[in-house]
Image (tube, rainbow, N blue to C red; front, side):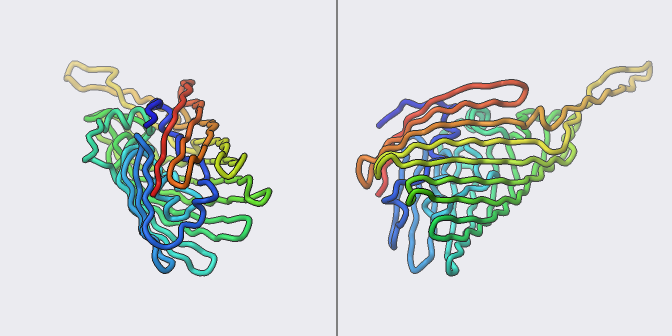
Length: 314
């Protein structure tokens, strides 16, 4: 077991990496995968149909690979501890899949720690539809997702009069992958436009917001056992603002006057991540993954992290 990891780096590990060539065609039957310290997943395949289940931190990424998908929609990629399920089938060269996830409340993890360290909007219930068209050297697809019950909408963990409630979001997206050099190199891109809505619990309100998520990554196999991955992710606010009402005056009758303060959505959301990973397969069942990540967050905050994980597959 390799235990060298940081909570910060958990956000990107196992997310951008293309499976090794031996994993691309699963065949019939059952497939089990476990990444030490992160998650486990299982899939059953029969006659063109796949059913998958996953549990743990960032489990949707493992679940998507079990189903043979090239992209995980942003709203279904909370980077927190979840239970997930999915189903996929093919109609000719087109794969159609549904993925759902919800918080894993039986894990023993502290939900607040997971939310604050690993996901801007915290845990959520999410459901996605993916349609993926596959060709010999490239594939492309579209996604539609919905999510609700955010524990930290806009990254705010406040409650009571300063809290936000009934947070909901939906997104439309598309992705494209292209293999070069006989499959030795793969380029992947994805973009989503999301709409975010929330209610007010009192002194804080948020006008309907819209933001874009853009991802691009490159995977290069040095050999059949060793691969390098480079990834970039950008979240960019397009519209919306947070309004906070604070007491400012009080008259002789005890009436309180309020002053409103607006904060642009960009200050709450805009961020980007860059990661570089190395993946080495020891044999058909075991492999090791290591990587570095730099992240620029809202309000000028930034940081870097590193992690190493051991993965076992049956």
